[in-house]
Image (cartoon, rainbow, N blue to C red; front, side):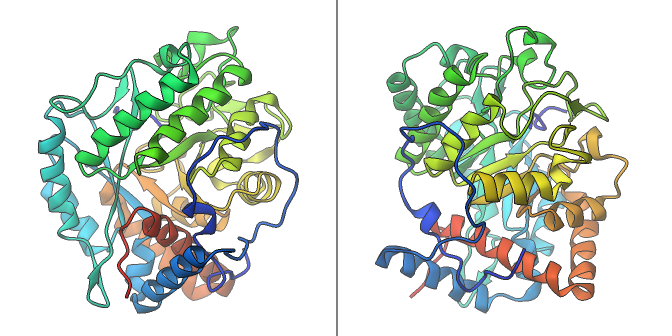
Length: 400
């Protein structure tokens, strides 16, 4: 995403086990073997305790509060629009994306975040905190800057560093975000842009957002970036699955973006599989179409991509978040409500829209589909549990 510019019911058994451990880059970067998509039962007391907390909070929520957890709405980081914030509050939206650009620094950002958190929903006498995210990649994609924030070099520069240096630097950047109240970064970018395409790759290469031009370079650096964030207690998101490195058009500004190169076994998927093995808690889905994976659907609306490749083949158990499906030109032909329903039906868990004013239509469409389909309702239950498990890991749930 560069939006800052412009299943069966497993609810009861779902745990935070896959989210609870520290992120540790895997020794092997080969794609994971096929495995059941359902989360495994927690093997530790901590995992069972986390699952109990998630189930407790879920059980105490109203239906509207549960649906609200499925959404992440954008708010301008520098000049928050109170009317948009009111929409988020009215629809119980559980996550906020800080968009645009702010040079005001950590303390000013923390003031904004504190105001948002103060309006988060109360469940069983306790606040269910908001996931507060942003795009803090480096180079030309760094939403938050100013006093307290380092100036981050581009990912292409970061990719020339040793992985130790990058992990240590990422841990510092994460601490800065944490000081500003941000608990989720929509980074790192794991897309592999071939050197032959380079700057002609509009979404990634044109802005030096890639760590390098081969999976061998991108994989360890993407892992190191994510590991640094885990070390400092900020959730990370690997994006844009199954990769935007082989496209030319930018899905934020262009319709009909197609990847005719990537297959389910392409080496460009290695950074994603490695991140998943190491415990990455969030994966963002691209809005491009991948003709050699699912030619009939954009990835964000594809059960083949999400439930098949991501869940079954790579065994990802965390939160699947969409790329922006609010303002992105790639989805403009699809009515807003249908965008949300199609993404969730395909196996997605959290809808990201940088335009909160679309959330009322999206929520109503989701609620209407839930009333029509028990299977869809079960998918919603599972998605809410996944989001709450991530919140539990981030210290946003209070049980006891």
